[in-house]
Image (tube, rainbow, N blue to C red; front, side, top):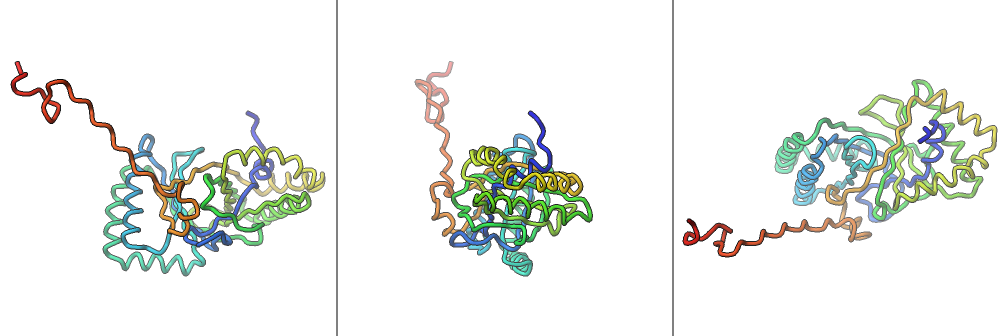
Length: 298
């Protein structure tokens, strides 16, 4: 398959919807601060990892913890699980951390689970990002009704932040000119990985939305016009170091959403109880544990 240029990848990928805090009662603007924890799961340990993560969810529920989070697992790219928590500010993030440390019972349980979780991971990384409202567009979307997340990570060369910003603004203007409603959220990484780095968050109800994005790329280019298209290609070439594009699927089993969030699509967000394996059929003449009766032994 032909490789897309950095510019083409960015253009086709801008089919985003803003992420809002998981605990909000309805579709709201995206949170000002986004804390992300990335876990690299060992090959073949996905199912075991889900079981341990359910322990974290249960611990938070028992503590009736007010801060909620969403989990998702990689469909493309490395075997990873991401956990997303939205905050109104960095101060709110700090308060949540302090409150957790003060709750000794919860901390002890989380420490036990972290040790168990570590046996299933090859690495982990904590990131924090802040919303770039000047680069975002459109109204909020109900994340509870989404099924996938598409994440576009743009690493920009030092001193070229403005190239990324100009690129997004030109594309946004083209969508407005084409009268195509396109809400999206842009976050800038504040800590946890080399920068300058920007993330575009793209929740999707279905992977068919990627088909729609590809189909309308020509319309957007036409709205931009030849001059802007040439300018975009130069901005991407000069300013972008890498663009990574991956798809994740939401994981209800590993998420800790609020009751209000779950109620908006309870069928999806309420994990179904695991089916118990059927008991093996007993052999004729076998005892209660499936073993041969004493009288039947030779």
